[in-house]
Image (spheres, rainbow, N blue to C red):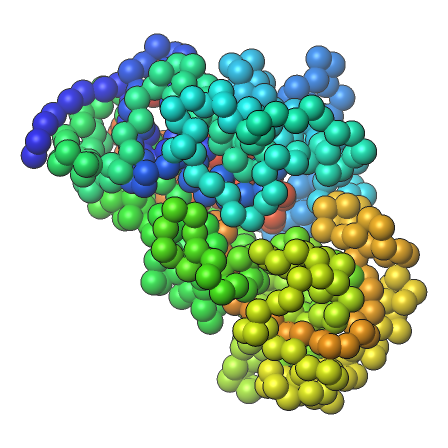
Length: 528
């Protein structure tokens, strides 16, 4: 042990939740320490699209969106499944309050013009107003700029506002958008403008427990081991378990590759369990499909990267098929594929839709970017290529007649801009976010007709969002299995189970992360 120190509040993890809690606690007068296991801050949110979903018009001077309307929309999203309604209502109130507070504290949250709810025009949905983003000048981060996690999946510098409208904003030398813009904004406010101390390459190895309360943690850092005692609490904000070797089994899928940064292996959740925390199942499963392009690694590491194909699946001249050559869902919205990817056939004793392939034609290659490859660029030899659909199927191990029949049926309907089987490209959000606005009559549908044809053998990829997590209450206090709080211990983000909301809503995970961080810091500082 190289040293002992004492602070008011310790944030385990330098991602969105840890930085948000640090900002809130610092403004409430607390001495805060952030401990980040890697050499960069930003966490999983830095890899994300940066969407933030909040109802109730938190940034409007005269709110028009009511929480009753928001709840009616969420009722549609979750369907007939049960939910803790009182907890959900409390969360919606707290998310609106937290968003208002962080915006006033300097985080440049703003409404994305023309961004509709995912399921719009469902009951209670809106065509604009609930999806927010942040854009930040990277130069404002000063010495912390080189230590902001690089996001590999989105074009940094182009905002959602520009994507969703014809507006073009004034460029600067280092414009941070998407997930990097979101976490960059919180890093600027917490680490630069408030001067909160953040220790990089400092991993929590143990939580200090006295009696039944958590009173600090033991960190391993560049200079050795440090015992940190806390006067007000410890926040677990270090993500989920997607990088764990047991992740696929926990999520009930045949295999799972984590697309989030290679720092989410569930270690902090395990530490909390040893301190008495209860682990519960919360949110619905959420993952997608991806492909490992040759030579791609997670930024700053030598860890191979499997890239989610979120921005590709909804483009024309493409489809996803199983080994029988059949489509099994609406490719334009990746969340619509999840239940089918988890389907197991008890008669054949095999997964119904895994393995699966992304099948496209040369029109797709000529028009659209694929991973690191620009439109029209030659693709690597690892991607199967053939001059006919049946030859492609045979090379991939797909039933040739099944694929031939599927392509013929798909093409006939796609020429009319229709997908009678799955309704691909019918949601306004999906059409605008994942389709080709210059392609008609449906921006998400185009025939797979122009040879040569290509097939990408897909992997199931996680986003750091597991179904299991620590059980927390409204103030983000970690609960034991009997429902009593573990004194001095809080959790947020993907480390905390989502029990108050069912179903996926784009941008909800980021909002939920900073909302519970806000509540945790407030409770620890006696302000809730």
